[in-house]
Image 1 (spheres, rainbow, N blue to C red):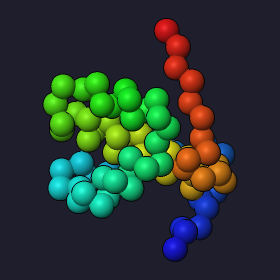
Image 2 (cartoon, rainbow, N blue to C red):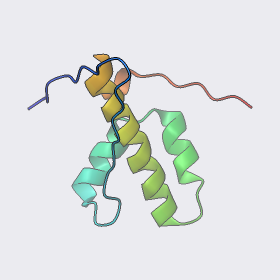
Image 3 (cartoon, helix red, strand yellow):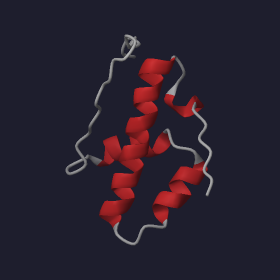
Image 4 (cartoon, rainbow, N blue to C red):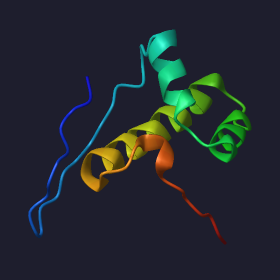
Length: 83
């Protein structure tokens, strides 16, 4: 079931969080599945597995929040990095 979109009032701020410890393998796979290849490659460069998982979960959370507020699927968001 897809949750309904969230409409923010002017000046409204929402805080989103997720639980990193104890993510099941299925939850982690779902997070990883919505990321772009570049995001996965960047996360896979972390030395420690806990950091890789935190990076992937955090990016998935950001994509999910944008999807709820912005009307596009989590996979549709495109991010650009620069110096």
